[in-house]
Image (cartoon, rainbow, N blue to C red; front, side, top):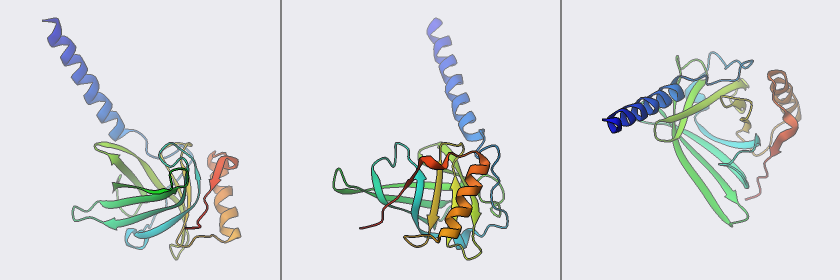
Length: 179
């Protein structure tokens, strides 16, 4: 009898956790996602110029992200980086989907089954060459470029925007692209 209640309680807690992870806020409080977003222009390869380092990219340089449409309408995400300590490339594949309308650059990305995290384009130039991207909190931030470098004026602008949202930009890791 007691075992049935424990199993039921655990099932409810598990379902609640999954629902909460799917419904939780996907963008930092002061951040605003780009509107009039063109997902087709965003597809392709991006070089990571800077990031707030976190466990899945720790120790990686030469990091890139590549986006492509999937048959199911979601976006295939392929992240790649070189681990100099282990002298090898690491790659991870995931999927992204828009939170609402696909003209608003507010997405959720998953690399682990049903668990999604925020992916938000906060700034992008008119030619889709440079982007400022956030996760769902102030722990995740990326500056991306179609090239291995970024113009100083764009860099300064993106850093200013990030600081106004609340990011500590002095914690950014500046990625080396030498492979």
